View 1 (tube, rainbow, N blue to C red):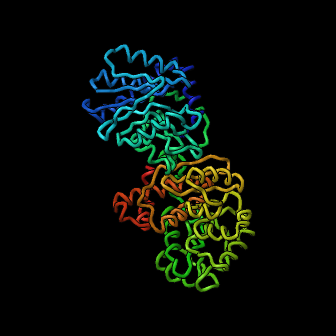
View 2: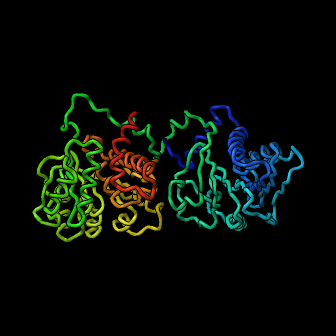
View 3: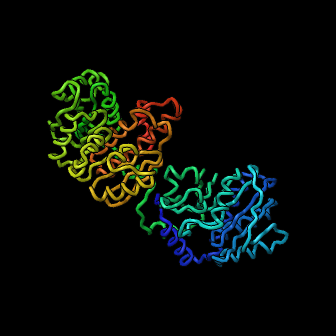
Length: 504
């Protein structure tokens, strides 16, 4: 599914109006009807509703919603802000007039002084102050109103976006001046900002409402952001031929584990096997032979010359995919081995966990990473590699910049894991849950990505598909074990089921 920017959505709106003989007023009516239906499905008419409408079309939406609710017997108080520094849009002006035509409306148009109404936790506020057309952070009296709403304890329903929030980047925004919605009713698409964890408490529950924007325009409009869903992954996954053997599904080398951390190697290799790789070789220190041979009997063990550390990474064969990092530690000997390997290898690799920490200890190694390699940092690893960032928005922005600069794929792990390509395209994951915040979960992801890369999928797809399968397997594990009880091994146990479900 495409995730459009504010400007791209505006163009789709304009195309719909121009080519499908829809007026702005009719588009507002569609939006208002969808919002009103959602509200009516959730609350009875005995609830008190307070509508705050701004001067633009978002305010027009709110006024049209108020009219529908009043006609359905709801008790609604309406405040329209027509301040001297702005003017009502045509759509908002038309909806004000239509609202007043029904008579006996509790309506106040604010031009100068504003005495806010009493709000309590028993009330529902409909936020239609500002939508995606906002060009700069809120200021003046609107900041006071937003803070008043946020402190009231009322249940807040924001129309399209919480007022004060930009659809994409909010790093320059003062979060105190953004409405804190309990429910955001977005039109046609979620916005990029909705997928960032620091905005979760501002967006609340999000529901997308179909307002029948032009499907032709949606298909033709290009974007850099995509929400990965099951049908997207199914499109790329290849069925397995009846006449095939293990060599058809690739070979992978996994450099993982050290004394006390062999579990990371076992998890990574087991996940790769469950995700369909043909042959897995695990390179670990010699102390790992028994754990690997018993924990993953399907894997080939390739012993390092050192007893407890990885001190040399030499390719014994030509592997379809190479993954390095889980549990290898950051001993100087291991860093030296990784440095020598990266300076000589040309093949793209999957670099995770301690491989990233080793590189962070010698930042010049970033220049030695083969193009189109996959880096899979969580927030801490990302900051160690590329410098401290204040939030996930800044990490995403930085990742887009650095993926292009180093020509690598960066997988920003989190609730909505984002896979950033060197061309700036970002795949946002739609699977996964809080139960996956558990030791070893990242090792499992590395194994899955390695498996798809070994099977011949390009590195960009291997990362995006791997992230989706990992999350879906996690969802299945959570359903069975619960968010508290699930482990990384539970995720591995459901990888095959996840792929089977996608391909069904």
